[in-house]
Length: 166
Image (tube, rainbow, N blue to C red; front, side, top):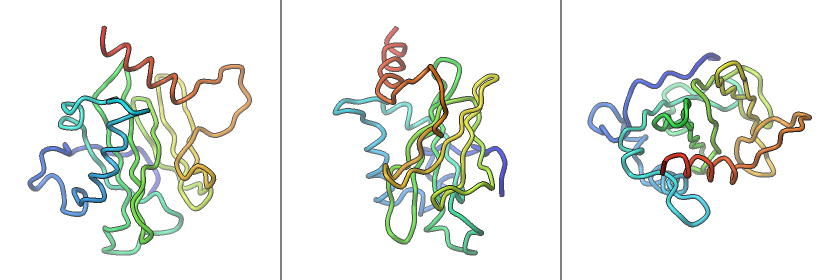
């Protein structure tokens, strides 16, 4: 159950590579959310076309057998500045929602559960960033750690967007 998430299928390939539950309308609505950030495009359409996808169980306990409607999705966006953005789509009987993002070369699911969701670890070079589900924010956020270095989502996305332009 725990381990690095494997991304072996492209999303825009549709066909046999993407299963019907992975391209449902509710998934498309959440994709629209992460393609845009603060009212303007963040990813060009080409990034979605070349994104890889993985269906994973991020909930507590064992997944219900043959219940693909509750598998969460993680999109591995194309490389940017030595790593990838991982966009998380959470799915449950209660609906589908944007689950946050991570950045690094690899994304790992652990067996540790916080707020009903498995802890994720993004690996970037020698750095490991732990992400926990926040009930308050309704998505994954970086684990609270005491550090002199604080960076916001807005700053990361603005810097990445600027780097893509140059």
